[in-house]
Length: 453
Ligand SMILES: Cc1cc2nc3c(=O)[nH]c(=O)nc-3n(C[C@H](O)[C@H](O)[C@H](O)COP(=O)(O)OP(=O)(O)OC[C@H]3O[C@@H](n4cnc5c(N)ncnc54)[C@H](O)[C@@H]3O)c2cc1C
Image (cartoon, rainbow, N blue to C red; front, side):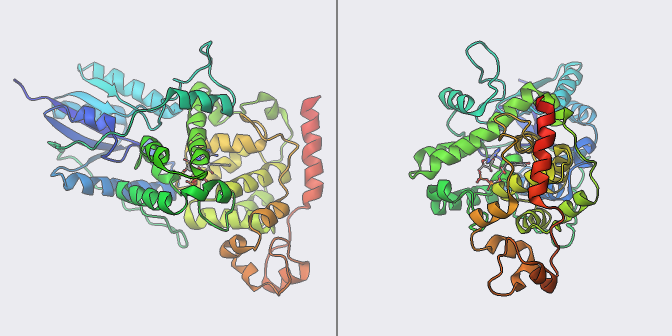
């Protein structure tokens, strides 16, 4: 019998365990583990995501080498590169985890068509989600527009138990494979470890130490006890199936809340799958008619974390310092941009995508739309976050703001770290507030009234 060759084209599934596409590819006699550095994605990704991806590819290569094979890496348009690689090795199938994002889904259609011309099949098995986007619908077949009924139907549909890593892999490789690029981080930016092993270790520690108290502590940026699994999930260094299986075994109040957060990730992927244009456009079209200001000096101050509002500045400095921001603070800084500075959410979403190591189109764009009032389940526009009040409530001792805004560590005794006096700001060299929050709140609400008429 002729030997059967396949290609495992890794994309956002950079792991060996619980990877059904890899298991399907491994049914062939020999497999080429392949990654394609696509300039359309690589060149526009921010430095944090590029660095994490590069580290994750190295980790995947190391795992493959421990199984006596290796990762081949090509650079270029996937339509050309994947077809050329499959043809060179006489592969009959290319295996992938399905991509439901606007760019990835369209790219895969083009790759499938180009492969078909050579009688090679693109086989999609599973996806980066517990439940594939598009597969949970209402009784009449239409998609869910709000989260709670979606999450119930999602849980009812259920998911498989995790899959083992393939036992043996007979690996193929390409002589034309290129090195994974080195990515230099700008000064001050430190990223956590990438890769499947780091993801598994982080998850194990998290379940043991913090999952039980997740619901009580998840809104507290000062405690810093959320799981930080988002970048691992983004790159598929762990699959949500693996996490959901563990959550099912865990005890304590935190697990239901944690499961619900994973459901948000799946919900936003589902929404973007049905409405791909909402990666850029308002989900609720009326918000596109609101008056906004062009991004100017206020936007620069926001990006650089010098608005004079401690929790806003801490969040934006955390973004540049660690490629990650606590969820509560993402909401606060997003609200500040849209409702205090009256700048459209897309500008902020782009800045986030530039710096976030977990930058993920569905969760980011819809997290922004939620805060801007234009998304699914949107927080009502009239509920404008007061950055000072939010800081006092969720960072009661000011530890989070002091961590990221060093000027505030030197405030005189008795000063409120969330609202220092003008004299104290002057003394420690911290910016005065760039806007009057009360006035901008009134302004935001009057602009909102205009689109309600
Ligand atoms: C304006 C804005 C932008 C955001 N951009 C992104 C993004 O680019 N990438 C991203 O992964 N998340 C994004 N989020 C969602 C959320 O802030 C992050 O998932 C979370 O902070 C990641 O930290 P964690 O892993 O410690 O979360 P945990 O609190 O430990 O949550 C566990 C997991 O649940 C998922 N999750 C939690 N909250 C949300 C949510 N609101 N929406 C979707 N999934 C969620 C994530 O996969 C997360 O890793 C954004 C939220 C807002 C408000």
